[in-house]
Length: 294
Image 1: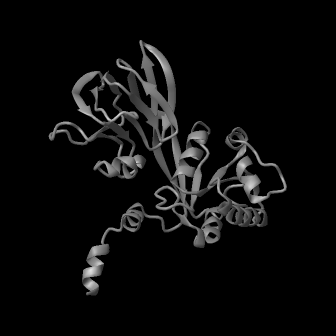
Image 2: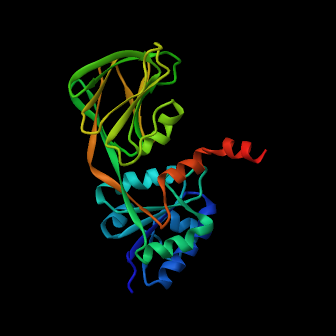
Image 3: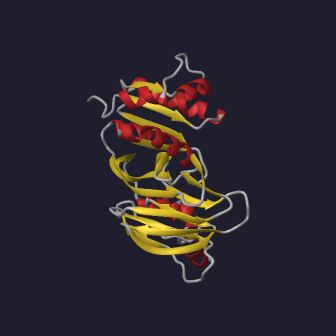
């Protein structure tokens, strides 16, 4: 039986610890009749004989990309491959691993199962973002986790206005605001007391950062909405997207957000459960078990 995916890219966290699992996976893929494509920097770290390939080649040729690292490594790979719609599987070498759900200890068995066709595909939405200054676009990018408007290096509140589908929602003085996808609802937005959105929920979470009013609360809106954040007053402010793209903001700048036409597809091995993952990563039920053991 031929493997479910034939040309498979390996993309690793840029640290020496990635070398061993990359070599092990490359060997497994060759034994299964697959063609491994190792990302250029990953190939150098793993001591591969071939020089490796860039993201353009991976996007054009790969049937699947396996990311070995943490959520940051997955975010970088997803941003580079989003428009190519290459499905992604993740092996966790990071701390939490909300997006890299395959444990290193079970890596080969999980990849074997995926190659045998025993997997599920989960589609995750992306934010498409643009920053406008005096009506002219200064930045266009995508975000898998979140788009953030925040104060910069100076410890002063900023003031911004929020509009949904052209309707004014509120003006707020705060440290900033997070607009999170369901994927990003367990990232920065979670630490700012935002809601957790199940990945299949077609929504975005709007989470104020330390608002200067007690009544400001996170709000979830349809992902069919057009969201606009206008900077009204700030000495120093910035916009950033998944922690990668960064833009300095001036008063009057606008950040427009909507759901991207592109999406990320995650490949999960047998037995994957979103809520099991949340229980393990967020340690839900741990206190109850501890009490039961007493």
